[in-house]
Amino acid sequence: MNMSQITVEQIETFVVILLRVSSIVATMPILGHRAVSVRVKGGLSLMIAFLLFPFIELHISSPDILSLTSRIAGEIIIGITIGLAGRLIFAGVQLAGQLAGFQMGFAIVNVFDPISSAQVSIIAQFQYLLAMLIFLAVDGHHLFLYAIAESYSIVPVFGFHFSGGLTQSIVELSSDIFVVAVKIGAPVIAMLLMISIGFGLIARTVPQINILIVGFPIKIAVGLICIGLSLPVFTKMVSSIFLNFGDTLTLLLRLM
Image 1 (tube, helix red, strand yellow):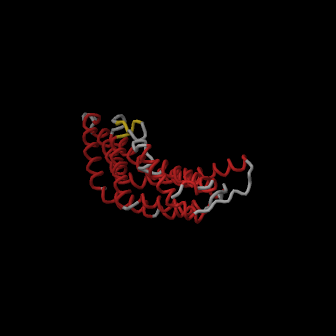
Image 2 (image 1 turned 120 degrees about the vertical axis):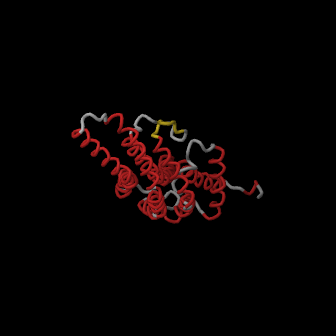
Image 3 (image 1 turned 60 degrees about the vertical axis):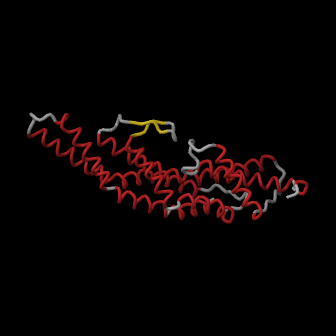
């Protein structure tokens, strides 16, 4: 390509495309994590923007700086919304691990998560890493790459409109964190709840037994066994959520 043939309009179009693409890449699961190098994110964003550039046209009709700034902000909001929608699923998986770990007595057995830079339960971290592997196994990352290209056919450049339906959909996705957590952690939580009820009955009928000493290793052993036995259910449920996530992304784009 002859550099002298590049016009100002083409540079403006490429920059606007790069804003939406880079915001999606920076917030999407796995690739958007802090552990991924900024060079990798930047290089991937530039490559995707370069591939999309020949198929997208941009016409800036208004020279108003304020209007142009709000439209650019809309492009960034589109990318952030798409990326964070995927992260909400992983937040639900992590919450399920937190609940299961708390029931097992692992409330203070935390590890440092380099991705979120926070202390998380060891069970939550295990399920989170397993969910990441499932996400890659079912080609969940392809959904986001497809959403980048599909977003320009549904929401044209500078075509973002904030609506009440979009706000309601984001709130519903946020509430799904707790729904996903309860569904995933239900087998382990229910079993440990039964164990706790049984220990309560034993403590009332045979007070000579030190339930505090006996209960901890039993709950840990039962919890780990339940987590191992429920892994097929966990895999099937998380896979189903990721496979149906494409419809959620399409709905979000149409509400924009």
